[in-house]
Image (tube, rainbow, N blue to C red; front, side):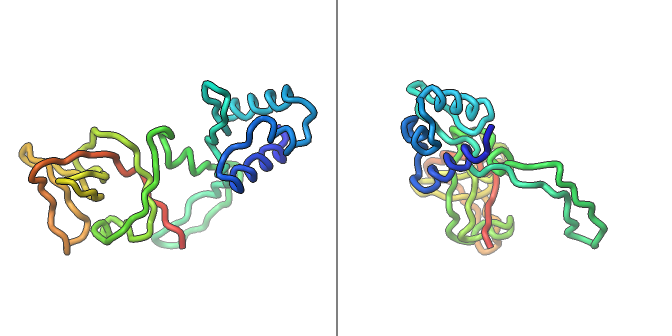
Length: 188
């Protein structure tokens, strides 16, 4: 597939915050027929770049694209490193297991600071209601929303912060887990 076609469609998406319609793709790429667009879209679907719904509308799957995965960097003692340019990694595929149930939230506050989650970070959350002990969850507790560790002790469920300045939260009335945190994104 011609990467310039893919790049033009991605640029359209980034500029307009929506995928182009078939007629817009035809104009964008200089195609003479909708059949050519149809064939291109099917190739994009096969490559996992876009998905089509039942009415043929396009949804991006891998807009971020793949970037080179060069190897491992030592966070301890320095070692020699060999650059390996043969592998790539899609951040979408790395962070997101179930696209339909995944969303991002911006972090406010410092109750999870000892876990390395800081104010201003983005968390990747997956809508699931079956957390395990120790999962970081997005939960509604007694009418308010928070992000904490999900904990079970002696058949009692509570939420535990990752900051000694905060106390565990024991629900008085109700605790509903909306999502489980799958990753953290921080921009420097």
